[in-house]
Length: 441
Image 1: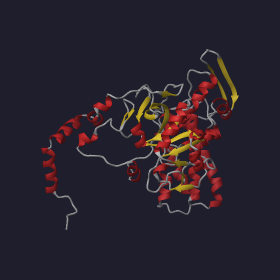
Image 2: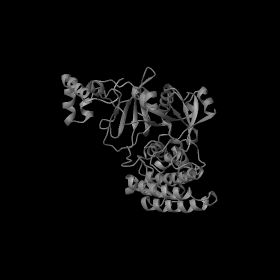
Image 3: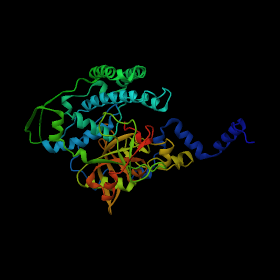
Image 4: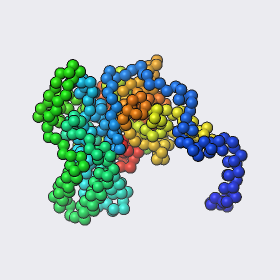
């Protein structure tokens, strides 16, 4: 019978074989004092990096900076909306308040969490569901439909009206306090009769509001703001609600946008609608909804949107095959196979099913390089400041899009009649821990 343990003699044979291979020792010597990214950099792919594109949206604005927070999904959504504000008011540049957005997202997530705790009261605290709910009740991350819920309920305000604070830009301490308190509230709610839950929860939510106001400041009820346009004309906006501001100056037909995903997994069908249980922020708001389609449909709709001067919110696994300094997402930018003398063979389905990949980040597609009606590379507006890539903008190859892009948000008008029909089909529930329940952060 084969031995189950690894013997010392086997380990010795590993060592001897390793030392006899000059490529192994060369890689070891290089990696001892150098970062993997520098050692594995593929010269051929490096020389092909080009930040020029055949099709771009008409107006690109300076890259924003989410700093030490996980608000990429909100930044990407607000960056999409600000393009319309710049057109509406004829401005050189503009930013929405990401802090205002963050305040309401945290408040709504807290309420959503407490409602789910009440709903799941009969579950054991050891159950997978309760463990999942308690893990990160108010993390920074989010999804497109969660963004829509906040804009529909609270609108948005210019950045000057509610500027960043220390804890909006560096959220870990705030998240710790909020999570600490919410877990305490969860333990109380689970021990009390359901009939007392509403009053208890209201008092708990007042505490959460107070904590958020201390960390982030209190959101304004109305906008009183002024700026100057391209022609130096003074523009004054007085006593306008955040919702009216969005409706008047930042209308991007948000209600007509849909989320397409590419999840080639054995438990999911293409041309099928999915949602994720216990995933959301605004109670009774729009639920998370995805239409799972072939990757060609994601690219086709995104390309059509960009050609029509509409940027595209999209979600991907940004940390894979990625050079942050160069701002490049390229399957061949690093030659791991040659460095390590082994191949990496998991495809997209396997990576999703075995926990090797999921959506981690949301950004905007603002350009695409097209030859013979085929996309070759994509331009991305990120929210990590202007130091990486081309002043904060990045380049993604078409091959990388295939492997690590999971969703795009486009207007319905860019979908075929066939796909539009599927939007009205039955929606299948996925468990909270499904890879498609991952939040961009």
